[in-house]
Amino acid sequence: MPQSGRHGRSAGPRSFRAGRGELHRQLSAILAAFGRNRAARNRQQAARARHDMRTWQVERRKRTRHLIELGGLVAKAGLVNLTGDDRVIILGALLWIADKLRSDQGEQARRLWAAKGKQAFEVDPETHETDRTVSAGRR
Image (cartoon, rainbow, N blue to C red; front, side, top):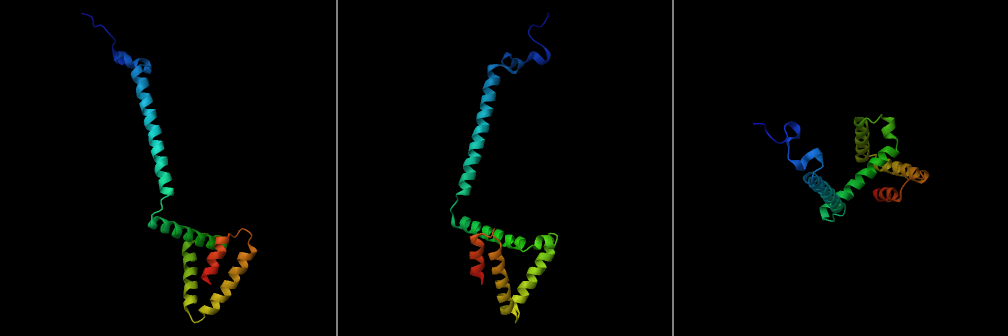
C-alpha cells in the first residue's frame, strides 16, 4: 500500500510550508515583540540607574568625578607622555611628592607648587572652572 502525503524535508505540517505559514508569521511576530520588550526594559533600567538618587549612589558619583579630575591633572601635567604611561613611575613620583609634603620642607614645597599650579591654570584656556575650584580648596 503506497503512503500518502509528503515525505522527507517537506513532511512537516502545512503551516510551516516554505516558512510562510500562519504559525510562522505568528511566531516571528512574537519574537519581534519579545525583542522590543527587552530593549524597552533595558532602556528603562538604564534611565533609572542614571537618575538613581540614593545617598550612596550620589556619593559614589561625586568620588568618581573627583578621581577623574585628579587623573586629568596627571595628564595635564604631561606625566603620561613623559613617563610613557608607566604607572609605576607616576605612582613613585606621587609618593615622592607625598613624602616631601610630610617633611620639614613641606610648607615651602606646598607654596612653590601652589604658585606653579595656579600659573598653569591661568595659562591653559581649556581649564574648567571646577578644576580651579578644586585647586583653590586644596591650598
